[in-house]
Image (cartoon, rainbow over all chains, first blue to last red; front, side, top):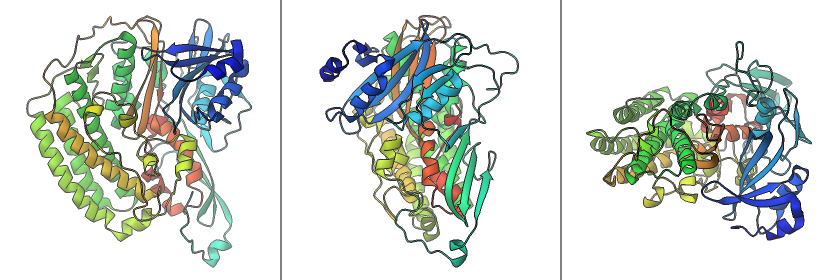
Length: 156
Length: 384
């Protein structure tokens, strides 16, 4: 454990588990989706962390799950962390519900708006973005899902 | 934001002007790419802005999943033409981390040289586009002449001016071409001289300064709240550069400066600072290039050439580089198969464009193309 995450692990009990990400063994915090916002807010506000920069947010489908991965760091402290949560992968073109982190990290806006269109993720409590609209091409379904079929007439 | 604290002189007509709605784009030469701006203006002062992107979305991340590992490097180039070397580097670094491939020192320095040449070329392209937006067409042609020189050097080394497909997992595809190092020295000396000319033509020109100083002011707090990176963020005083924060490919072996904005003519974080920062970054890149080509170590330019049946073991990695426009990162996931399971890109313009609706408030309509030009947005990066 490179970061002092003991307090967070105590607070969240079984809802948070610590692992390692990649060969560089960056701290990877797996959090149950029901407590993701709480954990993100704690990392953002806790004085010893101040994780105020959501550098990137990524989602991928593997082993029947959609894994949401957030690469976060602090502007003022030399901390970085990978935060992860998952939900069961949807069947067909069903939408997936997931909590939005825009209110905690406004930087999430750019990533969540793409996940919504390309992965079919419906973010709960996400403030409507009237300042940036996305006008993607014509396609049925959600192109970045594994079940998406790239056939005739797909204009992405 | 907007025009900062510069006093505005309102004419009676402006004070009693009516509200008008304007739709600008998606295809307009005054915009930095294919996207739509919807403006609500009071007279000629902009009050509300919304943007619409996605018109040229390439479906690039899906394309990676349809390629095998060996040919996927081609797709990395398509993130953006001016960012191709940084994108290839980010992708290579992520795959090499999953595979545990060590990159020879010589290959690392060659990669660094190409990325810095790419940065000089990109920043010169920025200056040329800005000169056009501000009505300095002749200066734009001068700058494009030097950009040609950079493209010639890239062609000499990689065989291509754009879309190089030059990096390989474990190194680069060819060694340094004969005469390349000598020509780098000549080019850096020449561009350094030309920069002084641009300085006289633009920076010391009151007409140019008046178009940019106090325009589109962006505070350091806004930069951090929105997660902006690159020269546009550094112009607002945020000293974040991945090459210093987490050095890669040998940047820690070289001495260079990270300039930040100081309100050279107007206030910190205005359009003028965003120009000055890029000019200074070109100088730093020229110094880096001079030092790097003199310190290319002997040895191999690649450990082992990947073959068409190259596979990546199951795992994932996240790499980050300082591209010309800011933080470029790449999340690569493999399930051990012949194709990537997922390749996701965080491009600087994808995030930087989010600030545009806020920064354009209070700007006059005539200044919109100029303020947009100072952010050096790449719609190719947004619609990747």
